[in-house]
Image 1: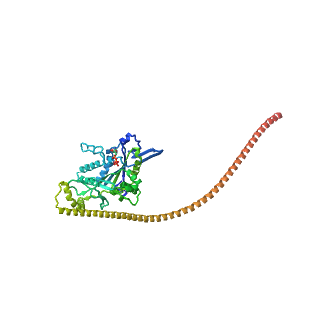
Image 2: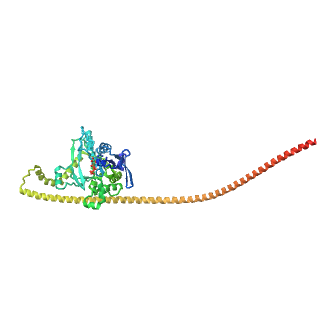
Image 3: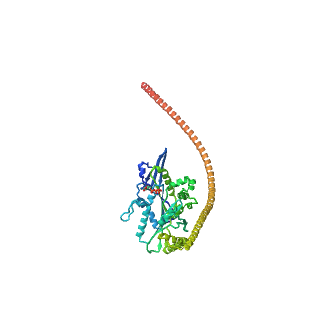
Amino acid sequence: MSGRHEKEKGVNVQVLLRCRPFSEDELRNNAPQVVTCSEYQREVAVSQNIAGKHIDRVFTFDKVFGPSAQQKDLYEQAVIPIVNEVLEGFNCTIFAYGQTGTGKTYTMEGECKRSKSGPNGELPPGAGVIPRAVKQIFDTLEGQNAEYSVKVTFLELYNEEITDLLAPEEISRVGLEDKQKKQLPLMEDGKGGVLVRGLEEEIEATPEGEELIKCGKLNLVDLAGSENISRSGAREGRAREAGEINKSLLTLGRVINALVEHLGHIPYRDSKLTRLLRDSLGGRTKTCIIATVSPAVHCLEETLSTLDYAHRAKNIKNKPEVNQKMMKSTLIKDLYGEIERLKAGHQLLIYTFNSEVYAAREKNGVYIPKERYYQEESERKAMADQIEQMGVIIETHQKHIEELQDKHDAQQNLNQTSKLLASTGDELRRCQYTLKEKDFIISEQKKAENALAHQACVLRSDLEKSLKDNASLFLKIAREDKLSADNRSVVNNFQAELAEQLGSLCNTGFHINVSAK
Ligand SMILES: Nc1ncnc2c1ncn2[C@@H]1O[C@H](COP(=O)(O)OP(=O)(O)OP(=O)(O)O)[C@@H](O)[C@H]1O
């Protein structure tokens, strides 16, 4: 597909299917196999007899990896091209989707921790998509000898709470002791994207280089077990109250359905996961879903549900665009602006915690005069209250913005629908006119048909009459033939009789002649 065509029409989300091998438990229990993969034909077949009912279904995907496929195979065939596109300046997302225990983490992270890397920094065979992608990115950037900067963020989204997995340990520990992890809010970035405010970023940067900057982003997502969807769906009412619902996966399913069915409203805003993945589902990001399944019979129901879900997701269209190249000076200006904004927002917080953090680090404590201590304490409390209030205000504003955004979306939908209605009205009028024209043509044709039918009737009766005449002519001919045959036999008889009589007459004459001499 040409670049322009791709941009206008959009490209489908790429969906890969990976079936893991039997686990040791399954092998020990001789678990029957219900899934067979045909990598060459890109097909996955599921067949099983249950209580006399035969299940036999075949699904086709963009790529299929059977139980014997190695991490390297999947990476080389499916992920290398995606990472190359990130390096070209596209935003790409790869996410693993499937039932618990089917190999999402194995595929995304792999088994790196337990194995050692090779002598030349090669990754162990068990390494999954994430370490391989990181290696490819650095190897390529270093090979290009260009100036580059790589930012890494690592977050966990669980039950609608975002936690920073790169946050320094002290913070995590404090959070855990308090039975409360540090939660991070989601913010709109003002450019149609979403960002997680306050997320730690690991940056590496190299010295000065060219003026133009190319940016690409790679999101690597390991989702929770997909069986949560059906569970939460089945018991939605109670589950929501009990706080068990996995809102993210449920909303992801709804977003996929809405995109596939081209519904006007896509419920991205209903969960943090779909807000984070908004651009990857129907947006400007190139997306690849790796659906994982087990080959064993006891997972059949979930396997079918994963296959249906993934197969449906194949129809989502994204419109990938290369991120605009930026002048380095513009980028730096943007970053300074961002820093100033962050500083303004967090100034109070930084000031308040400064002395505490210092004391905690030194472990010896610090000397503060009593009055100053009380004064600072009350100021701290006041500031903490103020921060809390600001948090509430921000939250209210954010809700308000979300409501406005929803209203705006609804208004846009309404406008689109009105436009559609107007163009449908025009179309209807055009159709009605065409219909009238066709009616006229049909009535004229009917008239001509009637005249033809009448003529055909006349011709038919003429033909029938001619046939009758012909038949009587044939009878006449037959009679004449018979008559001439009869005549011919009379003549023949007469000839024979005449000949006989002449014969006898001759004999008699001769005798007379002789005696006369
Ligand atoms: N393709 C594979 N080849 C070999 N072993 C695999 C493969 N896929 C998964 N496994 C093994 O299966 C087990 C479960 O895999 P994994 O933990 O990755 O599942 P998961 O889908 O991430 O589950 P959860 O949703 O609970 O996180 C692991 O022991 C893993 O090593």
